[in-house]
Amino acid sequence: MTDLPTPARTRFAPSPTGFVHIGSLRTVLFSWLWARHTGGQFLLRIEDTDRKRYVPGAEEQLIASLQAIGMQWDEGPLVGGPHAPYHQSQRLEIYQRYAAELEAKGVAYRSYIRGDEIEQLNQERVERGEPKLLSFRDLPGIDNAARAAAGEPYTLRLAMRTSGQTVLNDLIRGPIVFENATLGMPDPVLIKSDGFPTYAMAAMVDDHEMAITHVLRGDEWISTSPIHIQIYEAFGWQQPVWIHVPIVLGNDGKRLSKRHGDTSITEYLDAGFLPEAIINYLVLIGWSYDDKTEIMTIQELIERFDLTRIRPSAGVFDREKLLHFNGVYLRAMAPEVLVQRIAPYLSRAGIISAAPTEAELARVAQLLPLVQERLKLLSEAPETLDFFFVRPQSYDLGVLVPKKTEPAQVVQVLQAAHAALGQLTSWDEASTEAVLRQLTEDLGLKVGQVFMALRVAATGRTVSPGLFETLVALGQAETLVRLSNAATALSPSLVVS
RNA sequence: GGCGCAUUCGUCUAGCGGCCUAGGAUGCCACCCUCUCAAGGUGGAGAUCACGGGUUCGAAUCCCGUAUGCGCUACCA
Image (tube, chains in turn cyan, red):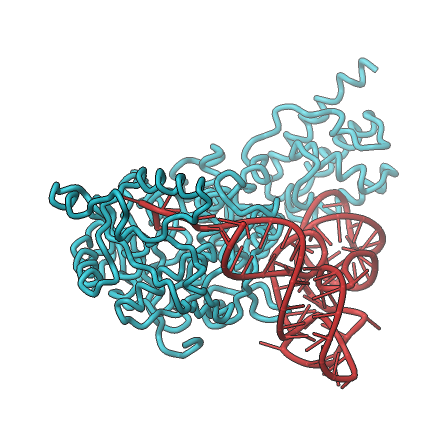
């Protein structure tokens, strides 16, 4: 029933009403990992049974998100499979057939009462201090036969049991026992009056038809699981292993939603987070391998993932920690791969062409090692590299002149450095370093003062890669131009003062 | 209201009766390294294991209450 080595079939069954968010992605990740871990299949099924909530383009977004994050499905839209179609809206006959079966068995019945009538009746009952309606089978004032004869629309409802127990065997929580007599659950609609099935009907039928072995879903489904279990029992089907996954909360401890900063996964990707970092971070909310291992490759996760180690309690999504993971993955990334991943960000920033030339990519590849270990997001690449491509147009004199240093001294440093570096015949880190350290000593200044002034002159900013590697990457000619520009920018201020 | 789920450092977690004066990670602070920023190294602060009873020689770990948070209570998923 649990951690058997038999191949599992799991599924992600979203309704096409929006994007894939961080919260739901974590549940998908668990499902996907379990299928891969057991050598089974991961299916994608579109639960588009609510025509009122249909959002055009949502399915495409959803599919694109899964592909971008790298969770490929074995059966479903685009790839097909033995249980096609994988859109519930195209499986209506199947649900109708099974619905008829339940009706024939007497566990489901036609209900002609309308929603507004139920509301009305319940309101009256509440006023009289009576409990709300649970069954809609034979109600005073509702003539089912007459309505049927008139051809009025009806819903098919499941007759919930009113005695005994319904037991949900949740893998990570153990058995959860519901007393049918005190459940207080109205007979749920299986088939809506428009002929479409509800979630309860469609999902159970499909999970059975598609031979799903492990159902992973958010723990908000625990409350309604008696319906699902009673459907399984009514059919006499074997239940899948139920795994109710804890939810992911936002910073404020509130459930992640569009309101509370739950962002679509594509936004994280656009922001420069790596799929592998997102996956690695996300899997650790609610699951752990042991007491210290955190950084794991996808392959290791597939090998190590174990449903029984999922925690039952909700976890807060911590963007700071994700950022740390992203940095780890960024630093470990092969330079040639990083170039490819970073190029689009540089293109978007206008630093290189939209369709980068070989020369541009080569230049980026040359520069990347200088900043790779400082990156936490791919999107930070433009701001850390742009000065290599664009000469500083002006200088902030307050920044160009380091603390405890006189403007005149800076001009002197710039001029001396210009002279000394200009004479160098070999332009490499060792040579520039030797020259500049000697110069510092000759001027009787501190390394920090000199190097900072030169850094600002060369890059226009106080934060950059190492000075020497930066100068070398910039090239001798360009370095000299920038030093001289900086000196010129500073000189007028001397005249004034 | 009813039913259900959850509860260990700010956050993610380890822990499944003695190894816990509660371990790791992240974040924070300090120091080291150092031309800046990161990275890296070292150290530190940070959890009376929600609270109260019990069981036991012994409980974060088992049982029962209480509190708090959350979910469900749709012809939504």
